[in-house]
Image (cartoon, rainbow, N blue to C red; front, side, top):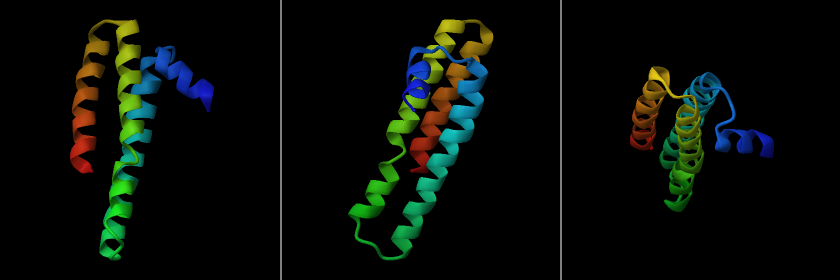
Length: 99
């Protein structure tokens, strides 16, 4: 697990991989799953701290993936990198709204 995190933190993975697979697919799936779990826990009448904890669980992951895309795009440069940065900002905002 550590090499996965370390390579992305340093921006050593291809932009396509970090952007498409890691951020858009994996990050979105984790956030959507947490949102659905939070909704289910609220509907089940669970005490408020548990749904709150589940809802904020993906925030560090989303922030990490955002930074990984930002750093990788900074290393590569060019129009594709600027597009990835802009979409990453919009994606992060959407993930926070979803929670």
